[in-house]
Length: 255
Ligand SMILES: [Zn+2]
Image (cartoon, rainbow, N blue to C red; front, side, top):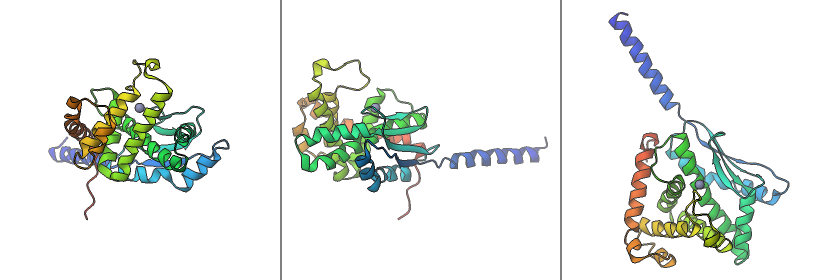
């Protein structure tokens, strides 16, 4: 091959690789599946387009390799999960119902708001799993804890309203822990125990803004030593996630 032709081929290869990199314009796509059994939930969440507010900032900030459906639907179990096989995130109406029933018992008038807030946390936790899989992010800790940290990072730095989602998520785990006492819980489970997650969330929420969120330290049962580390822990988890996401972040829109 003549040097000039070799140069043209090289340039074409570079352009092809650039266009495949910029073709990574997949996004999170909200979807609400109708359900006879959960028709009230289907109508409420689809009419409000509940997922849009949660997914828009991620779509604006992160390049994804493919479109990823985020589906609210009936699954026959109270769960929310990311499926790596289908590259899809699912929030089951059964879980929504369970959250609603748990909060309804002691605060019926705010049950729906609290359910929405706790679900916001769950969606971001599952998005953490989705990003680890889709972007093949290298992690060196338990994926469940890393997914929790993603949720905390986004929600704590967003605004006070979204910070509430962490606290409702924490509260929901604490309620579940009361239903299933610690001695019946599986320490080998891939998730940390509910009480541990509750303590972590409050510690990190405080650590995100120690001046504003001192109240959260008082809600958590933490040793003085742990309390003194919350700011560092929060800064460390943000540093870790931003470093991992950096190659996939979209340029900030000019003002
Ligand atoms: Zn998880």
